[in-house]
Length: 118
Length: 115
Image 1 (cartoon, rainbow over the protein chains, first blue to last red):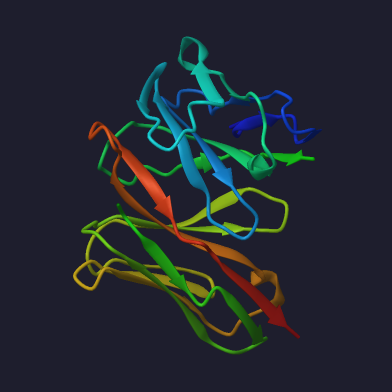
Image 2 (cartoon, each protein chain N blue to C red; image 1 turned 90 degrees about the horizontal axis):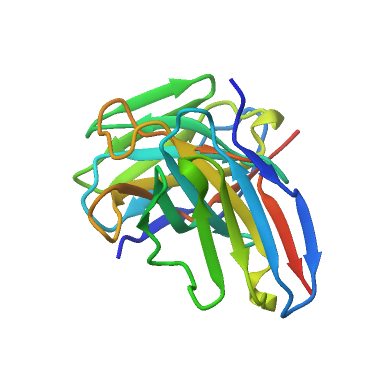
């Protein structure tokens, strides 16, 4: 089965520019997550979708970050305008059954997009 | 707010030795996940611990969960170089809207196994 696909793998921009990341989750996975991983730290959840609705965006800096999930499948995360502190790896993950507390709701991660803001 | 603390954050060990990584968390949860991350790569699921007293083993790694102590351990037996990676624990909890579950990750433990 194909994994979580993300693009681009790397992006270098200058501060105040805009950037967008794309994610295609594993087929059939209802829940999609965007994480920010700063060097030396664990992933931090930015936004969580269930199908095409947002279920948690409490840690998303909404003045500059936005995300959408088209038709409950692909998702894009945008930063506009970027700041130096946005330099990080942006990880997308998906899981099979939203909120199901059966055999474990494992999240499967993509390879990430490494963003450098200069 | 759920806090997840791992220690140590850095671990350098010799091949053949044993060691344990600890993961403490601040609220009640009975579901904990361990992930591995190789440099420049994404996170790979290692273990899912779903109840108090759960123990899972795969090769030289064994994970356990004590929900009363809010503690999980990842024990490494007779380490080999291939185990060098960063290991994260993640605790499952309700999201802010109370409608779904989310993971809160620790900072990770960078493990280096030296010949």
